[in-house]
Length: 341
Image (cartoon, rainbow, N blue to C red):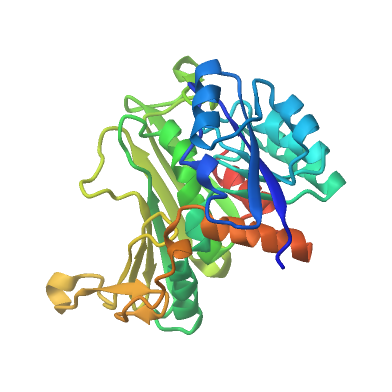
């Protein structure tokens, strides 16, 4: 019989709400009972308690953690100004954590969260669902088997909407940074250029960023990273230049072709097996990559593969029971934060 877990959720209605449905992260798990919710917004708290049929609802998340003593807590709020405090409060009580991205506001906060988790052996996973994608696992196998030759470049972009520039880097770039790290490892060095209205940013451009980010500047940025093995990685975001369909995602340029990964547990993943990178000249066509490889029908059909958080929660439970780091654990989350900050 699987081990049984008690879970709770923390949200902040009006200040990041419940992120990308993190309050539903435990749905479908017969061995996880959702027992309580905390939200400092009275109306939001009532709505969430009703949604999940919960009798235990708290305005103070610390009181909830103390009184209900969950095994796992989902830190759902998208705004990150309270992520450090919420995560440390849970970790100090030995409670395992699944939390919305971005991880936190800077590396100092990241280190405080990690230290608290290390002291109590609490496991922490962050909601970077693409890391758990079976399609990304297939991409890694294809690269490792030499099917695309040598990796030369990783090219990532944000959504480049009204948030383009610094905000896009934080809010959506964290996904791209984690994709780069998942496939290519941790960068060795970085340099970047950040501008506002065409001028290099200075203190006069700094403002209080949205979503609890803190000091923020730039409506355009371009970052270059040196990767293990000699490849280069790039991330760019320019405000109000969004693609339709979106360019948000990662393209991997290899000596034998291009691979494109879009965000999500089973997000669209395609490849161009063309050494010229120019299908108009070569006549080559883009092919779908599934969990079984390229141009092969997707063999996975179980609903768990198509939820946003299910595979991450499965891995978190496995990490708890096996006393290992989750695939998308706190050290990986810190690494993505380092690429941003």
